Amino acid sequence: MSFAPFDWIDAEARRRATAGLVRTLRPRPAETELLDLASNDYLGLTRHPEVTAAAADAARRWGAGATGSRLVTGSTALHATLESELAAFCGFEAALVFSSGYAANLAALTALAGHGSLIVSDAGNHASIVDGCRLSRAVTAVVPHAEPDAVRKALHAHDGRALAVTDSVFSVDGDAAPLTELAAACRAEGAALLVDDAHGLGVLGEGGRGALAAVGLAGGEGIVATLTLSKSLGSQGGAVLGPARVIDHLVNTARTFIFDTGLAPAAAGGALGALGLLKREPERADRARAVATALYERLTAAGLTAARPDAAVVAVRAPSADTAVRWAADCRAAGVAVGCFRPPSVPDGISRLRLTARADLTPQEVSASVAAIVRTAPDGASVQRG
Ligand SMILES: Cc1ncc(COP(=O)(O)O)c(C=O)c1O
Image (cartoon, rainbow, N blue to C red):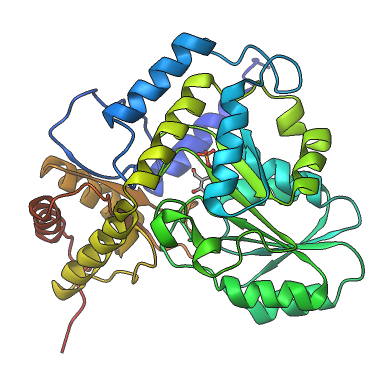
């Protein structure tokens, strides 16, 4: 028998190709004429001169890498400043930064839930939350999307330590979680609430302080937030925010904190630079939301089906996975880069174009984007309007 231990990979690749689900890497050029509605750079800060200068200064001063894990040599004064500034900005007692938002979610879930405890997780939660639930070894009850009553019931049925977890803004449809109702359910059942504010920071709440600040829950007893520094803050990395005793617990127990090299100084410096800018220019948050509303209203007025955006993500329905891929390619050829979500990244099997409503898009760029998306729409993407 010949030795071919990876033949099964070819069979899987053929299956993906038949289903129109092949993914390919497309390195982007440093300079491009394309209008960017595909990235997560919600506030247009990743190339802001102040942010890139802060990142470069941090690398020059502290080095290109953190040199070690946070508990050994990987903590600098920059990390401490970023943690206290993030906590103060978002309204929490303390914060801890990680090398990614993914690592932050794994840390929060594995450190706060464990064998014998219960996690109640929304069916639309991000993959990093799903993986955190799996790693935690807690029993995980996956409840229907955005149904606080289902969360309450699941919590009620459990005796002992429990935690409910939700995205603040869901990355597929851009809809906001019912945080007030979820917090009430958790309070009634004595459970903690963990909110992944990856898509709320910089967009929701006064001056972009996030989804929890927007509903008066930031810093509340039993509330923990996770963030990414890679979207509105235009950098890289993640954070957990919460009561000081929760953060101390993570320092001592979270494996993605203890066994991971610390956040690179350039990323910490860049995030601090972006945070400073956001404090000085809070209108960036309002502008991102206004661009999202404009995109939604104009695309639906043109007959496309889109979900009403609660933050800066606008999702437009496509008839199928392969028409979505072709639609995204046609938009690109027309000068507009858009995201494309299809199975397995969509929980309901419906493929979508995913548009990022960047705060720095001009009205002319919004008009050009809408025109390109409508012009290239495939058959079946439009709805009949009476
Ligand atoms: C909701 C959500 N949580 C967590 C992450 C992971 O963050 P990071 O890219 O910083 O690892 C992402 C994005 O990529 C996200 O969309």
